[in-house]
Amino acid sequence: MRITLRLLAATAAVVLCATTPPAAASADPGRHAAGPYPQFLYRGENRVNPLETTLTRDDVSQLTLLWTHSTGSLNVFAAPVVDRDMVFEGEYRCCPAPSRIEAFDGGTGSLLWTFSTPAPVVAAAAVHKGVVFAGDYNGTLDALHERTGDLLWSGDAGGQVFDPDNVTVHGSRVFTVGITPGIDGPSRLSAWNVAGCGAQTCEPLWTASFDTGVGPGPAVVGNTVYVASDAGWLYALRASGCSAPACDPLWRAKFPAPGASNVFQGLAVARGLVYVGNGSSSVVDVFPAAGCGAPTCKPLWSYDAGPAQPGGLAIVKRKLYAGTAAGLAAYPARCRMGSVCTPVWLDSSAPATTHLLVANRVVYATFGTTLLADDASTGDRLWQVSTPDPCQAPTVADGVVYCASTFADEILAFGLPAVSRAHRSRARPRGRA
Image 1 (cartoon, rainbow, N blue to C red):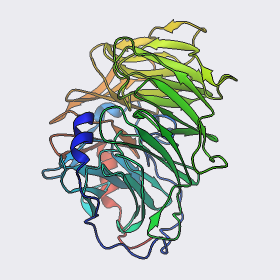
Image 2: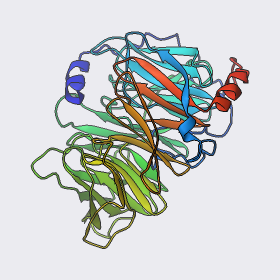
Image 3: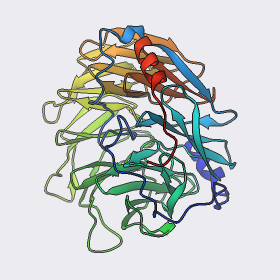
Image 4: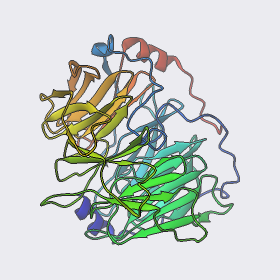
């Protein structure tokens, strides 16, 4: 699907068909803390939500359907993101055809606003301080007012924004990955000011170019941003940029793909380590986040945990959780140097698990048309439900589990009965913050 979308979307028009934008970034969207799960990787690092306290191992079995929202004839590919009890999702009709970004009320699923784009929106949005950042298949990064959907500013991401984690916010920067249409790139990493540039069209603060397609990422921790390429290279760059508009990596590392290509990898950063998985083989490799003191680094150790796709890795304290071909698995987060780690537990009833998120000692995951919750300590099944069509990566925030059912063309929300009542009783201001 990735290659097909890239090739077909190359002919898409580049003129936005959305509401006429207001004066660029002159309206302050409001200053408030980031929401409960505002982007694909929490803080740009990892598929965990440490803020979730409502759902527990004791009551997750009581989850029930709160609402569904039909997207009509448009498909949904990435995980929903949640901020201030609002849900944001990119939708597309392939290819090329007008697509859109929509905002919903988190409690009822009612539509709040729509922003139209001329090309598919398949990467998850990222929300930061009242601004929704979304990239499309024409390579446009749009910055939208969170409450109204008005366009604040936009920029050229240098290629198709495709993978679920290709838009990441960290501190005062928005990072995007754009891929040139075709097979295996080339591609570009771009860093932007979250506040824009004072105009309707902005240029990135700095960029880095790669000869092949960059799959997962960007992931960011501290002053380092990481991306991984389809050719099997992990790159680390200084997040604050360099002394030139175009920057080179600080270091790189090779992760192998014996007899296969490196496509749709998983990428996560936690506790001083970078975990990168190969979407077409059975290995997850681990590298020191600070590098190895040389231009090229080797793995510290590996996991028999593949194929790991975007949204397929999460690290919480002493465990790595991974969606593998054998099932949903937990591994030690640290292993002996040079070793290949084996699981602490394996839920083999969830084969080919590709997407997951860990919150409050519960692992939420999808495989096929099943959305499930396992005990993070034991792997015991706590809850599961069938969905109309395979769901993308689940999102868990404020006691609600959201998933986007790709070809059933709908968003689903599950919660506890008490959560449902609380959400529905909230008043929803619709003006500017």
